[in-house]
Amino acid sequence: MATTEQLMTADELLEMPDDGMRYELVRGELKEIPPAGFRHGQIAMKVGRRLDHFVADSGLGVVCAAETGFVLATDPDHVRAPDAAFVRQARVDAVGNLDSFFPGPPDVAIEVISPSDRYTEVDEKVADYLAAGTQAVIVVNPRRRTVRVHRAPSDTVELTESDTLEIDDVVPGWRMAVGEMFE
Image (cartoon, rainbow, N blue to C red; front, side, top):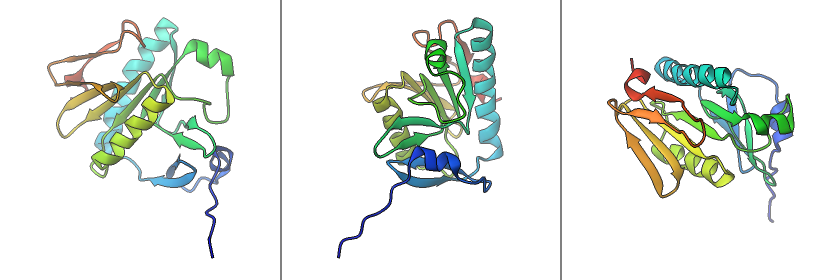
């Protein structure tokens, strides 16, 4: 006898009661995301804050925090929540101020690797964002004190503490010294 697994939708995920945990929806399956560690949170906030200040001052769009869900695909629904994200103003204007998940990928997704993260899981997230149309995925690795900028599966640049992160084609003029992320 065959059994059919019930997949969850993005709307069902959005309506779940707050139980103190974070969740993502991976091809319709609910995935619990453990709370971030203290260092992880500091780095994510530092990068997000710097990006947000620049974006707000420049009127380029909106920067979102970690709990913000982005619908990367539907049927089955696929919702990811990066540690920080940027969406261009034209895309924000097109959908308005939503109480639901953003309907599409962020233009920039920022992921900070936690001690509990598996590199294969991080690679899967990067692939998901890129496949959905994210233009730059920034992966911050606190243990190695490096940053990888992914533009396509075969287009990745690794930066060290002495380098400067910049993504001029997506956020013109924004820069951040990689070393500042780890101070």
